Length: 353
Image (cartoon, rainbow, N blue to C red; front, side, top):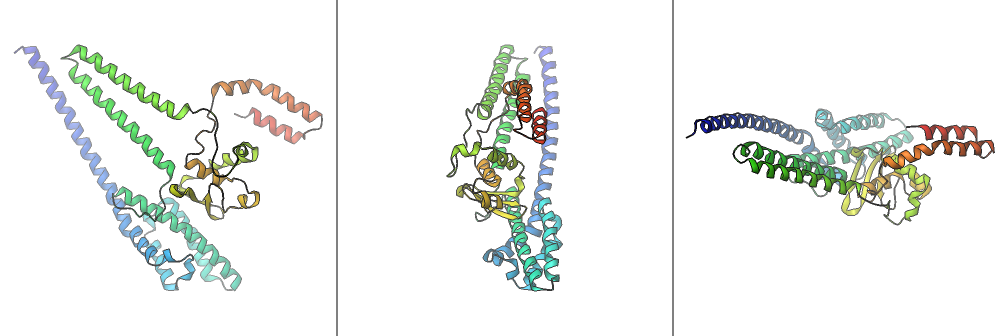
């Protein structure tokens, strides 16, 4: 056998041995980290979430008010939270402090009016906390590969979309790594095969990117058609304000029920029951038009995916037209059509980045 081939083969074997050793160490470490996280999840379930779910099934699921329970049952529930509060998620821990302070005020109230007030607050806040804990319970069951309850609130729809996107990205990256490894190993023996594999690799990468661009940027037109609302209503400036504020609602405060096309959203006054046509918030009660919570539900269900996307060409054209727009409003001010305060606000808004 040719000595050069023997030497080259020994180098390849040594290289592959090192690579395999590194891969084995990495996989072992990744498995240790995974098992550590899994043990933490199981400990949280055993200490906090499963005991609470048992209490929920035994008593809380059949009542609407915590204060309908006897004092001993209420104390046991709060003892469970106090002893295991470190196992709760950050949001639940913070909200429990609010519930507990209200509970103290309720037990210390000395007249009927204040007792009734704190009783209503306690029931409202505890219902929110219950929903938060049950959502976290379902998420932990999923992480531990345990059966989840279909009666509990499901995860946010947007989270499942993100999961699908991340999964596709991981699959594509893995395929690219495999093909690159084949190129490195095979190319010394088959030079022409190297070019074929590189072409295949680049073709797959560009094809994946083109699909991604099509999925996210090629939708034409602006469509906001949901519920019983006229599509033109959503273009009203007051409605556009609510579409803007909708984007500031935190995902952890939203529980979506996709099959029923409804949601429960935590707000400043408690939990709002939201459908595509109604909401229990004050804004909808007063205006009888879509509020930010309705728009949030519509967005999570995929009805607002055609909202305008940033357009550099249009933005550049608008920026060039700002001086003429300012002149227009300046003329309106000098004609007495608008106040100087409004004129200054308009100018500041136009010149803002």
